[in-house]
Image 1 (spheres, rainbow, N blue to C red):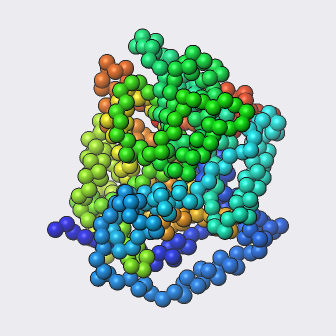
Image 2: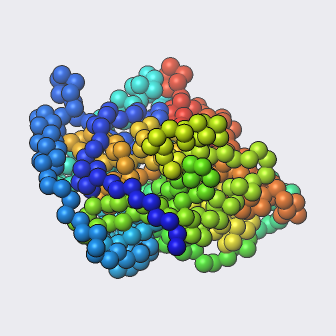
Image 3: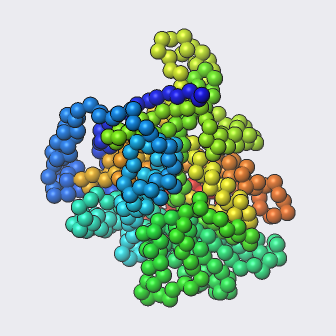
Length: 507
């Protein structure tokens, strides 16, 4: 029988409020933030202008709660995120699931998931004219005013703390989308010339948000490459029904003719079952940060991996416990990572052997290392690309670094919610499903190796598909963007200076 190691979590509602109400980072760093209200003394306040007395009273009430009433004798059913989506309309209890299923259920469950009810994407009412701004600070000030106005409107009509977050696609529109289109067109023309092919351009996009990127890419190609546009096809794959409807509404926007060659497919990429044999581009912008991860810890003496489970008790309390790895996806990922060509990957979760040998001689030495979040869904995504899109070229961008991650773990996520107009980061992923955004930084250099390994890039010369490459947002913009359109009067340029914590993976 597999060994079982328990790490009992604190009471759920305490976990949800054991957060530090820090100020949000600006747009230069991270997309996922809200602007807090401030009084004349510079203190963070509630929406009504009062202080944080209500919040502190809530915390005190929580701390006075009695000890947990969870009954460990009640049987716990092992479930997956897909089973939760099919069976439950509210977060289930007396269940056990892998960490990736717990996170996926928290984010994507159609009845109570975060993206089903909480997330809203900030989209400026009009495109910004960057030449009118003195510098980046002036631009941020203007954007912040519009951001707060939209946030206040939401608070006025909804008695729930919805989160707004922004993306480069929205705040730099249409120029950011045009830069993606320019990259695709250059690569498409080079491929067509090399292979002497007349196959039409086909684009698949995953997780298209409001649909802005789709529209900007199609507008650019229609206006600048009408011959390519006339035969091209654009397919947007969207798991969220709410966002899929928003993307369809974008097609009927006023003032411009709809793109009849665009299609929205309301489906998870992990449910994709159609093999696309023709060459295509696959676009994924700021999507994989919300791909669920698993958690593993390693035997302190042996380095043997143990997989984490989350048990939800009858009173809503969470417990994290570990067993020897038996899940096929976790085992396959760890196996693939261990077999990568080039320098071997050594997880930071396992300390050096000398340290471990010395530490073992002390009393109360641990039997497991600290936790490591491993990107099993990103690994699964690579498999989907390899199996169903064998001739694709990838255009993927996301965060390689994030502030306020869960402490004490390798590649840990940011877990945050909005409270009193401010973003509140939390110190655990064990929070009430549906009310918290959970998103991860990506180790792009490791992802590149995994992607090349799974999709066999660089090993099949006759396909014309070489290995992938990683570049920064600045490098990508310099190669593809019309930088004059986003330059302020001082010469500062948000296209180059913002989102410094993002990278691209291109193939």
